[in-house]
Image (cartoon, rainbow, N blue to C red; front, side, top):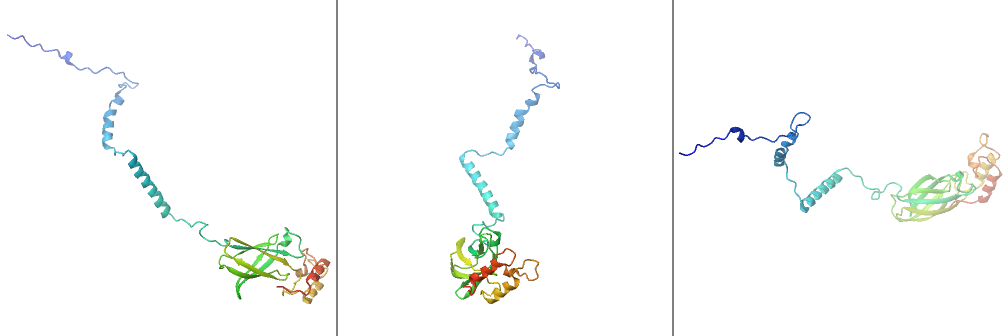
Length: 241
């Protein structure tokens, strides 16, 4: 008779889990990490695979560049100053010396001046400007075509000067226009008896005097005296060009 098969006691077949240390809350210290591998596995299933290698990186860089370029083109850009002419890009820089005024730089050199440009017989531009304290002025010529122009400059108490200027659309065209001769108090481009009578009537006056006439103050010292008479004598009988 075969020997009876022994049934092992169930307590010898029990699988006992290893005793884990507990944490502050009475839970196994590793219980919080026990599920991490399975969670990570689930997350990996849902991840979008990221391509690696040189080729995908090049594609990504080109796509980024295309987006930036599109944004730049689509945005309302303004043309740069170097491509669009603005008033004053092309100027005549003229210089005159006002006779009888204190030497430059001096505020007495700041006087009104009228500039006329002619192309042949056509008057192209007339401008009323003011010189700075050294006798300089700037005349914008942006809208004037290149060419050889004749100019004429005149101040209210001065005889006119004239000459030629060649414009080539340079940023600055410098022109020395010479000595502006004083004495034309009547502003008719002549120094004659009419101017002499204006000075004689105002002689010895200053602002506040009944006979004061600022046109007769040729030196700019705010009075009419012998210095103005001497300046008138210098150009008596002359006319502007």
